[in-house]
Image (tube, rainbow, N blue to C red):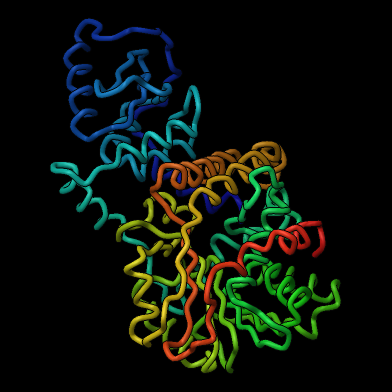
Amino acid sequence: MNGQQFESIEASSASSDRDLPLQYAPGRTDLGAQGSEHRWLRKVLDLIDFPPVCLVLWDGQEVAPSTAPPVARLLVRNRDALLRLIANPDLQFGELYSAGRIDVEGSLLEVVEALYLARTNTVPGGLRRTVLNWVNRPRPNSLVHARQNVHHHYDIGNDFYRLWLDERMLYTCAYFPNQAMTLEQAQVAKMEYICRKLRLKAGDRVVEAGCGWGALALHMARHHGVRVKAYNISREQLAYAREQGKRQGLDERVEYIEGDFREIVGTCDAFVSVGMLEHVGIAHYESLGELIDRCLTANGRGLIHSIGMNRPAPLNPWIERRIFPGACPPSPGQMMQVFEPFNFSVLDVENLRLHYARTLEHWRNRYTAAEPQVEKMFDPSFVRLWRLYLTGSQAAFSTGQLQLFQVVFARNRNNDVPWTRDHLYCQDEVRGRTDGAV
């Protein structure tokens, strides 16, 4: 990825007005002829349930909704930026912040949390949101589009991700059974937790759909004696995963295959997908279920780990446009479209939302420390874009806008299922897997 991919940020945020330097005048409100405009703006902010932030306008005026004390100051550089922000804050906050046309004085995390908490589906906000949801529809996820969508996010360079991910390059929610764990320990604990839920045993054949940089496949093979076919359509990730497999001497037990989930073949004793379902698209869930039904043995079991929502709703439109094109985190009811048509039995559902908020806190801190290096790799707009993405994602999980579901399932006639959950919480084994071993 290079600076050309961010030209559209500047273009879409371009103003007919000149970006004026902010004239700071704390407390300046209702000045002269501008008083009526100030009062009108406050009414508009109240009407659209704008978050409790103080807007500092290009001429020094300050205005904020009357609903709650401001959590921070939002610096707006011109009238066009203000109108865009009011018209579609879910999209334009990210567009304008990335382009440097608005800025935050105070905690960016608190501002984004407030933005999420201000979202409402009541009238008139509900009608307005219905219109915006239609305008901000996600991109499709056909076989061709899926490759383009994955390339946009995951193929921007392994060196970039290496700056702020853990040492194994895991880019999904970690698991913190002990909140004092490091990110590295919590990511290993997550992999082991998944293996426990799948009840892997030596000799099992495992299919992993969407394998990222390959760490889970290697963990399953090394610590549980299974053979893995891991599918991915990100070439950057596959190249890294294959190199790691060879370096660790596991390339005969782990096969990394360039392919979409629709191209998976063969049979397996366990099916696992971590962080892929949100990229599949609701319209393709039955195709995924059909694939699992075709591959899974009679006593097979599976696990799907996915970002989700409490009820059906589109992903934040700015995230979908700039970060994850085509992404749509499902509600639990929508996830059932994978299982119900094929009579799979759902055995366990767990929500790890706060674990993802903690994971993102680690990523965001590491990213912040690496921002000078990121700017050398890309440009200032890219730095601001990813800063907001990581901060906004942490805010989405901490405020409950996003969830993290792990769903375990099996065939309906399979009685070889756990009697209790005791197998998940053997602390001696958890410690054994978080000691730094690959």
